[in-house]
Image 1 (cartoon, rainbow, N blue to C red):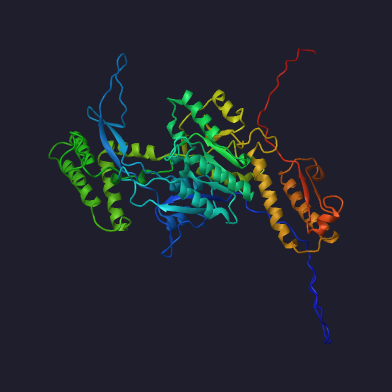
Image 2: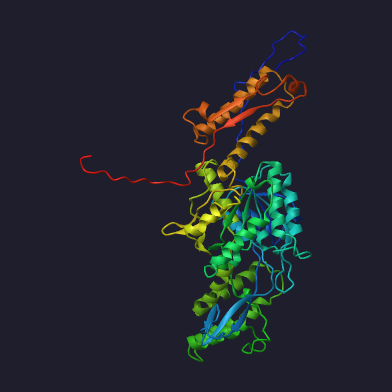
Length: 554
C-alpha cells in the first residue's frame, strides 16, 4: 500500500512508500486454557481480582496472585472389624498402631481442585493460560457446614471469561465437586450438567475454544467396583449431557493417582489438633495424633532415654507451634512447622506412613488440568493437527481404574456417539492418553479432537486477518488480495503436515469473487464471501496388520 498526498501545491521532494509484502495471516495460539475455580485469595497490588480473567505463564505467577491449595483437616478415627453373617471379618483402615486400626476422615465436605490442577497443568507442559477465581476458600472446610463448590459461582466465572480474547480451552476442575442433582428439585439435572452444557454453549457461540470435561462421579469408581458401576456412571454422564455443540467438547476418564502433591506439602497441621470426645482412646487435653505418636515413641525408644525425651518434646511442641497467633502465612511460623514436622518424620518413621495416607487422598485428581498441559505440549511439538493422544502423562503414578480393551470399546464408540476418552496404564510407558474423540463421535466431520481444534485454529487465524478488509473496496483487487493471503497461510499449514494432499491444490481451495462465491445482490448488501475447502487429517485409529503365508517355491 502506498503512502500518498492529495495536496502537493508546494514545489519540493515527496516520499512515497510501498509495502514490500502483501497482507498475511498471523496464526493464533492454539493452546491457551482458561481455568475457572476457587482459590485461596485473588489480589494484585492489594486489589481484589475475583471474577476477572488473569493471564499467567507459570505456577509462581499463580501463587503470587491466587495463593496455594486448600488445606483439608483429618480426624484420626479408630475402626473395628465388622463381621456379616456367613462372611469373613472385614475392616477398612488407613494405618495401624499396635493392634489397633485407624482411619483418616476429612472434617467437613469442602474440597477444591483448581490449585493442584494448575500444578498438574504446568507439570505436563502447560504454559500460557488464564485463570478466573470465583471465590475464596480460606478458612473453609474445617466444619461439617463448610463452604463447597457452587454452581452459580462457576457459571459466573464462565461469563467473566466469555469476552476475553485469547483462550482456546475451557477447564473447570472444580465442576466434578458439584452436587449430583438440583437440591431444590432432585428430578432436574445436576449442577455439573448445567455447568458442562454452559461450557459447550459458550464454545459453540464463540467458535474459538473447546471444553475439556471430566466424567462426573469418577472419584467413586475404583478397581473393586469397576464392573456395573462403570456402566452406570458413563451412561448417566452421557444421558444427562444434552447440547447442540457436542463437537466442541471432550471428556476424559478416569481420575488419576498423581504425585502433584508433594511430601513437604503435608504436615502435622493437617491432622485435627483437638481431642475427639467420641474416641475412648483419645487422651484428655491432647490430640489423637499426639497420643498415637507417644505410643509409637514408647515402642521405638527405651523409656527415660535421651532420645525418648527429645521425641516427647517434639510431640509436646505440636500444639504450641500450631496455636501460635498471627498470620498463617508468616514465614517464621511456617519454617518452625516444617522443621518440627521433619524432626517427627525422622524420629518416627510410622508417622511418614500417616502423612502418605493424606498424600494419597489429596493426589487423586481429575484429568482435565493435566490434559490441558498435554494439549499444549502436543501443539508445541507436533502441531494442533495431531491428536493429543498416545502421550504419557507426567506426575501420574497410575489410573484409579485400569481398563482393558473390552471395557474401553463402549466408551470410545458408544451408540449415542458421546465418546469418553480413556487414560490407560501401559507397562513401560506409564499412564497414556488412549483416546482422541469429541463428544460428537457419530459425526463424520467432527469425530476427532484434532479436526475440531485445527478448524478452530484456521478459522480464528483467517478471521483476524480479514479484519483490516472490513471497509475495503469490495472489488476484484480486494478479492485477489484476500484469496492470495489465505492461500499463502494454508500453504504453510499444508507444508507443516496440517492438511492432507500430495500437493497443495489437493489439500485446500480458496475462492472469493463475483459469480463464484457472491452474487451482485451480495455485493450491494456489503457482503464479501470467502469460501475455503480443506482436506483434514484424521488419525489411523485402527491399525490392521495382515499376515500371509507363502509356500516355498511359490
